[in-house]
Length: 449
Image (cartoon, rainbow, N blue to C red; front, side, top):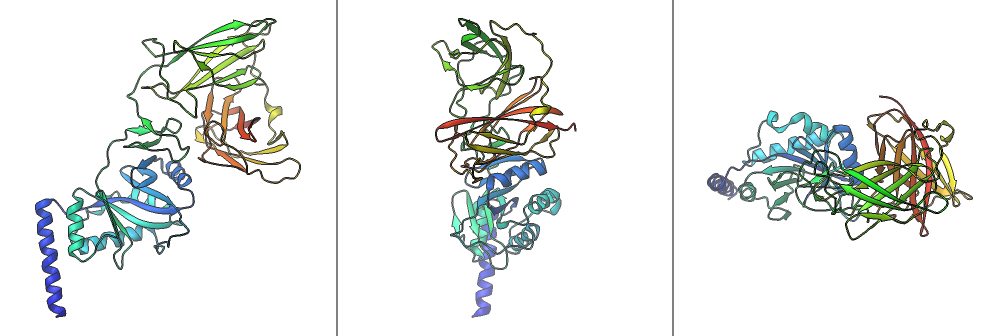
């Protein structure tokens, strides 16, 4: 009976393979490692930075990093679920999975065509994490699944686009329909987070928006002021214009709860405002706020529909100012304290080993100034745990960045901006607690590359 059963099983496999050949090829190629980690966004960021990869959101599969056409994907560790046994290495898990698939009649291409070096790098970087499964893409998913069913192995989970198997003697294997469509959506604040379908950014939680077609040229900002009695201005009117055509920009995407973020900074870097002008009927924006006599740079942060994120600057001099129009950059060396106190809170900045041309790690830690107790009751401010504006001493470089944490109540807020050149930079950290927005300035020194 046992011998007859083996012969029957072999015949079923051969029939399934014959059917698969008629329907399509029962073959698959390596697609991804899927890990369970404590912080999927952090794991994704690490892979993008260390492997020069692209941060991606794959519908139905998760978030991850793409290098070439291969992926490492991540889910958050769920304490309520039992974790699979830890493999010796991700590469060993791949080898065992590929061997098992070949043993049941699924064609797995040669090592050279599997992008071996990239695959090893994607696995080695996360070797200390729990590997949930190894993923393979199939041009004809139904043919491959038919072969595995004929072998007596049924999926533990299955949809129209993927099937998850748990064979004995091999790691869990996910077979998915080869749906690597071109990137069509991105995050406005993290443009290297991309997806072929709509979704939400795993870093900041913003809705992904369609990737616009390339548009050459720079957007322009026109400013008109209304003088205030006694000097300065009482109103600022902002008109945004498209490159080349000079047409007025009337359609902006909402980024962090506002279509337009405006920063007003004086040349001494002591006056700072982060404000949100009101859109008026003709599509322009208007700010009604007193700005005293001075020499300022106005920075607009916006995303035009059909364009890419913009940081546009214009200089203005308000009535009553009598100083030089082109003053020397301020000396910021005396402002390089790593700890500030404001509104009963102590804010400490950890910003070591800052080098130009490389992502910086800026970690702010908040505590009660009197007791030293960590602050853990921060509130979202404009859709983020915090905001950070960074400018260099002569105001020729500016960057508006947001935390790596999508949600953070404290005590730490972390930013990873790319600082373009060496020198001193001034930062303004903003966060909200008890309904009040705090603004805390710092100065950092960045080494030349």
